[in-house]
Length: 139
Image (cartoon, rainbow, N blue to C red):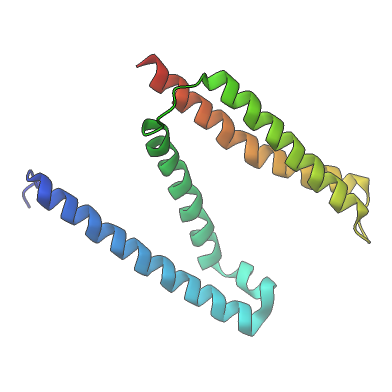
């Protein structure tokens, strides 16, 4: 099989891949919705398709971050944006800690656990974006 060199055909091929990804994602969502209706939330999250759906969502989000950084119009300092992100992430995590601790059946330790998990899950993409912005600024 020969490698495609025509840019129009490459773009058409990428559009076809995008349509295939959309159809596949809709199929996965349909399967998960069926499991949710018939078996509840536990049945849906126990399905291996759930893991595939979450994994592809995370990978897609990380791949889109590099594209969005390359197309940013304003060239602000990456450090300033990192500090703003860390402030917002800290606020969101504290809200999770507070609301989880105030919920019946949960205590402060549960709130700290949920808040810590949310903090880690949000701070990793923030540092990844910082690295991408720093790299873009250096080039």
